Length: 117
Image (cartoon, rainbow, N blue to C red; front, top):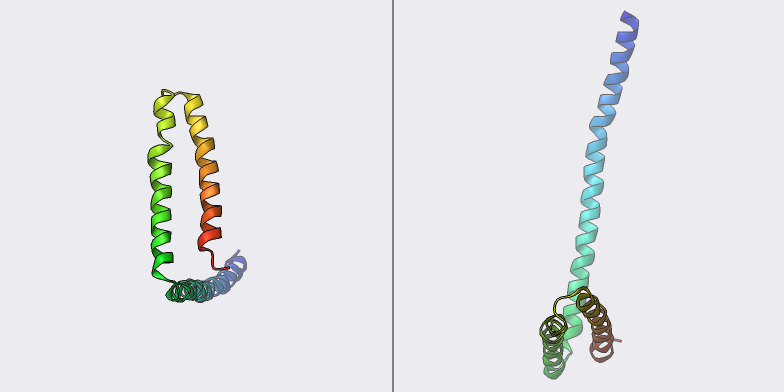
């Protein structure tokens, strides 16, 4: 039994040293993944800002007005469906379907009008 305990302690010490080294490697790999993700986000932000620099003021204001109109339409106008139909299940289903269709159409229009392509 003493031999098993000694062998067991030798094995556990080697396992402990491996587990001690593994978190360091994990930390280094995690740091490199975070750094690359941050670099990609930074590059995306820089590219989006640079692409908007050549934009005219009318296009920039058009984006703002379009998005504001979409929010007002989706949040105020479409919610009237629920009010008029009395907050029933059918009203909520109809509201959900029309809202999904409106958001789909609004995103397509936004891409067509303001897309960089």
